[in-house]
Image 1 (cartoon, rainbow over the protein chains, first blue to last red):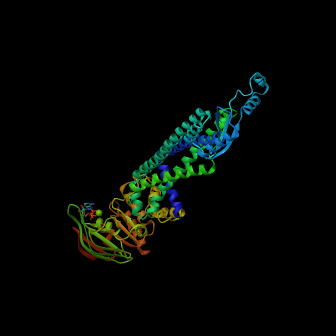
Image 2: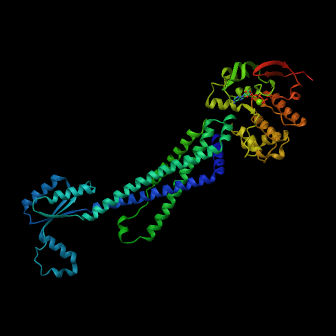
Image 3: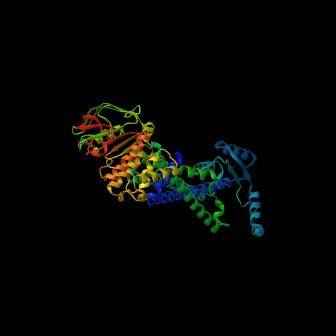
Length: 295
Length: 224
Ligand SMILES: Nc1ncnc2c1ncn2[C@@H]1O[C@H](COP(=O)(O)OP(=O)(O)OP(=O)(O)O)[C@@H](O)[C@H]1O
Ligand SMILES: [Mg+2]
């Protein structure tokens, strides 16, 4: 019989003796993993959607006058003064008209009576991919609006703004639920282990007297913590995966959700969540061992 | 096996439980410790197994200064010392077998070997039918024998026994002493604290009488 056999047997005895509080702890840990992972999943998916949105992001600068070649060159330089950009297209009145007509398709005959220059000329600016974040885009658009001869700048402000604030809110929620996870996991585990230790003072005392080494006495409690962390996170993540499957099968299809292309965590994130849950629970049990196991 | 040099133990409100005890017990000896209630017998045994620390003096067990030992070394030495406490220290919500097994589990004996040893000891002490009884439900005399069984279970080199026969009738006392004698024959050093003159009168073991924490006499029993 070796050390690990003895340690696992001891841990099993602990579990049997205090299984109700162990079970409550296990539930609490899985629930907090579930809550945290749920918000974190939404958060990562939002970020993904944000990336896709900003891939499509373009700022349209409407101009008062059709710029001549010289003017075009000057505007191009001024735009690039602010920041490098991916692309700049000048769209003349004529081109704008044709685009519009193409978009109308079969209904394009409504344009028949309109003069070909009723649409304003514009510049289409595609910012660099590095230009992220609401504030930067806003700054850039303000800069563009102040260029000579511009009428207004459009980039779907409202959408970007709302999206931005929603992501901000989610960041806070993820942060809070992460804190919740940390607190509940460590404290609940510390508490149950404390309970076990208190309930078994006699035995621990006796073990010491008959010559049990410190690790013989301590390791089972540490194992309990690790087990709580492992089982709790596995169950929490499994529950989330179930929920995820249910949502994607019920709300799939075209519409808003298709923009998000919901995807579950990649294996590395799953691994990290499990690992951190294990770490937190071990820390919890370790503090209890330190505090209450006077050996 | 045991060397004590000028060992004293005082408890807080200036109670002197032991004063200036010097004593040497050889390996393989069976040694009796007698004296009135409160003479300091239990205190002496507790000092030897490092449950208590001496206020003064030096105690060596198996060549180790037992008060300087820490951690693993202390644990390993304790595995070689079996103690039957006067207050038994049994886990009342565990069965007899589990209580005895504890002493062997800490030194990683195989479960099969433990089962055999437990059965064997229970047979010798006439407790076979109590194998699965919780020790909290046993009589004092039965608990006493379980405590003794636990102390010898791991075949320790040194066995300290505090009042092994206080609650036992003559024939059970005889069985207990037979078990201890067998352990002694197998090479274990044994120290027995007792009031019971029936167990130390026979044989030519050394007998030390304590009185108020001092050595009153050190004699040999009469060979019968
Ligand atoms: N923890 C303690 N705190 C204070 N005094 C103690 C403590 N333990 C023992 N004593 C005192 O030390 C003295 C010796 O006690 P000890 O238990 O060694 O006696 P004993 O010879 O074993 O007696 P008995 O035969 O009744 O078991 C007693 O006067 C006792 O009151
Ligand atoms: Mg005593």
